[in-house]
Amino acid sequence: MSGLDGWAFLADFARMSTFGATAGGGVDRQAGTDADGEVRAWFAELLRTHGFVVHQDAIGNLFGQVELVPGAPYVLFGSHLDSQPLAGRYDGAYGVLAAAHAAVRVLAAHRAAGTLPRYNIAVVDWFNEEGCRFKPSMMGSAVATGKLPLEVALDTTDPAGTTVRGALERLGAAGADSLPEIAAYGEIHIEQGPSMQETGVTIGAVAETWCAYKYEVVVHGEQGHTGSMRMADRRDALLGAAHVITAVNDLIRSFPEETLHTTVSEMYLEPNSPVTIAREVRMLIDLRAETTDELERAFDLLQQRIAAIEEQTRTRVEFLSSSVWSSGPFIDAGVRLVEEAAADLGLTHTRVKTLAGHDATNVKDIVPTVLVFIPSVDGISHNEKEFSTDADMLAGLDVFERVVRGLADGALDVVGS
Ligand code: HGY
Ligand code: MN
Ligand code: MN
Image (cartoon, rainbow, N blue to C red):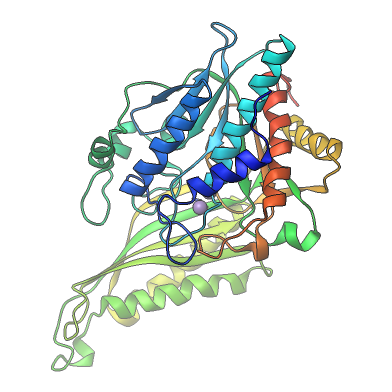
């Protein structure tokens, strides 16, 4: 049939993991870098080898299409090949390769049986899901789903001042094609958390997503001499930022344990010089919770703390921009499809929530969407130590093959499910 068995998947996964490979056993394939360009080129060739016609759209989404049913819409499957700095080999990349292998298996089965699916099949690598070099995260799918204007995305710059437009043109990744009309979307991903390992299940049927509020803020101060300036006269932006960082962490004490997750994870300092008091600190505040009500309450508490910090440190905290996504269910017929596929394969499974954002987070708001998880060992992710077992990857691939088959045959053509 397809010739793509588990061994073929593991061989492709090993090859894929060499692109941007780091000494610590992970990858560094930030969006629009050479490493991203190299893995994209390899993946495009893999798709062509299996009969896909490969395209790129204007925001660098890379996708392959096979049209078995002339003129019919497509069902789309994929994830992202870009990574965080010094990160893991599995986040995103597993799902892109699993989508390709599952699609090839399903197409081969239809050809061998002389049958046709209801929908054509496409596979996608969404551009810049991670949003590290270029914020916000999930950029390619946000543009494709109309949540982020294309020009705004293309004009986004990285810390060195390179635009998304410039990075895409440099890689030859600024395409002129458009994604086809899609009837449904499916994604498989690592959990990036510990719950599935703790409950001992192999397959997670994602039923809901947590919400996220991410804010770019600037703490404004005044440069001065670290030795001669009187303490009473200082407007130290780094001191103000330090208080904001601890205030962001303190928020969790106003909520039941593990119901609010907060971090400041990115910071740029000006002038960042040994004998000069900081004039400016730019930071990214990341708040996550099950509901937007909780995030609104957390944001209000933070604003109260910031008012006191500004007065105490004589600095000014400016909120520049925000990137948010709200909670919301995945279509129940899709969750049940995953549960049935896992049960048929004799795999342990459970319904889970995703605390991380995914491209499926965007796409679920426009078409019926299925998101499948496999376990992350010790819940580690965005870390070179990120790991999922070969057995879990292959089990997930077998489940995802059934998801691809089901969606291509119209399993989610359900009304009001
Ligand atoms: O922001 C997120 O949660 C996603 O991993 N990019
Ligand atoms: Mn991811
Ligand atoms: Mn990620």
